[in-house]
Image 1 (tube, rainbow, N blue to C red):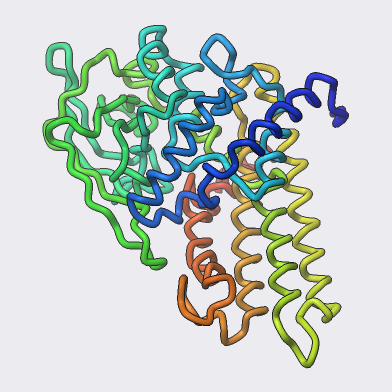
Image 2: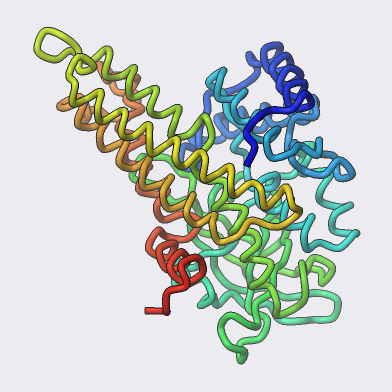
Length: 395
């Protein structure tokens, strides 16, 4: 791959940098899906999303005909670099721009695109993802939520769990079983469901961080119009895998993420006292941070290779599993190293008095395990990589 930026890429950078510097005061602190600190914090993310949308800087890699900027692979990278340069991030306000929108562009009908895409691009409709169930997590195809045809509608009954940000969502893209007699990877359909409709109940789950980012969602005789079916009936597994590839390819890499975390680790080490000096004066600490940084750079360039598929007009492939696996495991090891650096201070929780950096490191450490489970557990990613990339036989 040629990593040189073109004149168009440089102009894209100048334009976005200028806009960011003029509007950065409207941006909330970066946070991820596991760091939802209540409705106020979520509304800050939505306001930032709408601000980006007003400037035409939300979903920049979407095609121009659907309201995006048609950004190239390198321009998408520039976008992330410029956010990271100012310590900012894209808004975490649901999964419309990152998952549902790209999936609809690939599988949706013209009517579905006209109905949903504009509202996603204006941050007017918040989406969550209805995949996992109490008995169908990593083995997603075992899902049992049912949808039965009734005239022009489906009637949905069942339960989903670990549904991120469902308490704030307007809509959910939902996997349901429409043919219980078919093999488990068949007979599944992909529906778009109104979260405010009769029969939908959301119950937040308290995480060990103390936050409530995940939820249980119950469906009791929920009516869903058949026009909300994405792809063909009973063929929803293909659509679902497209969504998952977008999800996994977006985890890890870039100049923010792990690279930004390495820089924060270095800053933490520089202010932690140790034997009359600082932790940063210890060569073993510098060596460990350098080791983590090298891994982060490797993930960044792996992400560049993954993005070339989108440049060719293809959905992300199984290589996204490499990004998800390596990125989340690296993050977990970074947080554990931060605990080593902090020593007794690592026991102080988020926002505790006397905690370094307001206790964010202990929060991140507790939250980091969740990343290895979300978007398909890392054990499942090992299977995908072995079978689909390396061609190994199934265990």
